[in-house]
Length: 484
Image 1 (cartoon, one colour):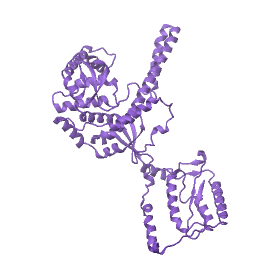
Image 2 (cartoon, rainbow, N blue to C red):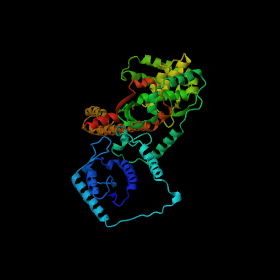
Image 3 (cartoon, rainbow, N blue to C red):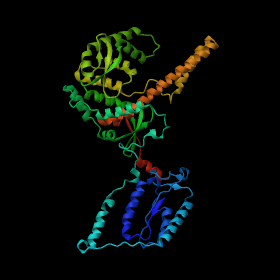
Image 4 (cartoon, one colour):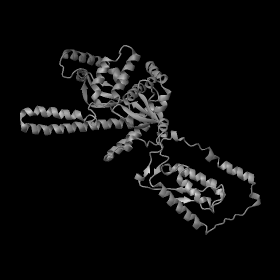
């Protein structure tokens, strides 16, 4: 399918036709051909006998071929392609153009126009107007081919999800949930006025003065591509591709948000109050071998001391951080640091132990800093405790083998029954782990990154500690493709 210029068109139309041709070529980049393409030379040969000297033909063609007949791997930006049976296609096009031009010679159309002396303009002025009218076309700067990207923050078409196998559609509740989160992100704002305490103002000033301007620009205008592994996400900024440490980013964001929302938190109500001594004992057992029973008395004493300490500081924790601890030593409320986000409750024991051991309760500024750091670490988007089923399926298989070995002692019948039960348990674990990992990636894309663009001020340390790692750039890839 296409359009071509007949020889009866006037010379004055050529500039307009060429401008239109450039726009059409830009809009249909996947199907265009380079300027010295054999098809162009073949068509110009046909027009040489019909057009006046120094004239250029206008041709627009849209060639539709089977995908297996098109090779797109000859140019990094896909601006040029190679076609199978190219010579035969060009010969057929040349013959069709020649036939059309030969038939057009039988009809001539003449256009007349009445010229009024009062409205006529000198030839020089008319030529100036034509030059001025063409200025926008000549001034429009095209993006260099080695800087062309197909995705940005407003049109994120390059996400990895587009290349992954399609999953079965979820229920309508999933779409409504995503809409609710997006609305919350748009409305999400911190209190207009921060706390009046001098220590909080100093901590916020430290964040502003320690902000890295280059990383801040990346954070504000980046596009989320997808998760590279359990720890790093891929994001694009202009023509650069970065790996970013999701845990470090989320930890710093939560820390800054705690200071900005100081004494202005909403609360997350726990379904059941959690006893502090039991939480601390769980955290202490995780630090060492869970099966080791040595020093249990020491652990109980540490849990008791930390519980009493947190009960003494309960009023301050509730007033400033919305961490509610009742007189019996039960944790019942936690703060909302990011709207529409709930932390992984598997890390509550570690958080409570950190409040008791790592907080400086003597000096006000350090006290608020360390509590905010503990909350930031707790709310950070750590990997779920269960291994990723897509990469660590061996973990679940080992659990099944251990169960079957123990069942062998009770006879064949018991072996069959318990083996079936073990298979069900493994499936439940795999399903639970898959849900946890999918929820984490969803939170990273739809909660962390939108909030990061609004609030995060990356510190200078992130430029050197491996939080941001540039993988490649379009300019480097273009040089590699040029040599191919």
